[in-house]
Image (cartoon, rainbow, N blue to C red):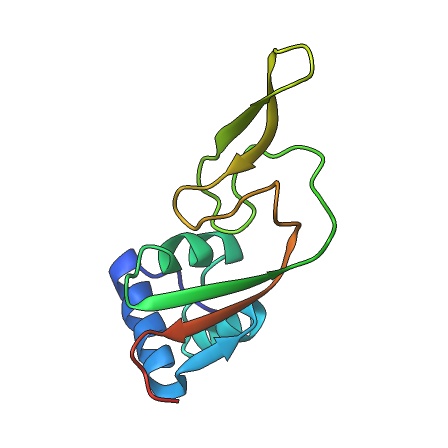
Length: 124
């Protein structure tokens, strides 16, 4: 059974795994690496922590499907800011959402379907 680590322990293990591998494609694959070290983390907590580590670059591929409504960022689970525009009647209307942490934008991105995690300045 994997234990729930502290944030510092999780960050240490994430950096250690990426230091050995350079890049990992797929969130579940990364979570399996952690599980092999007896470290447990939910996908939501993992994404939240990984965006706080400046040495890691995260790239996301998106599907064409759009969300019906959003209350949190689908990539990093942070709070979303609204994007407003004017309709033909001159009234301000919400046209989408954006995340100031990871850069997700609902007007130009669909649902995330694959993540790639890479250690910055790592020679592959």
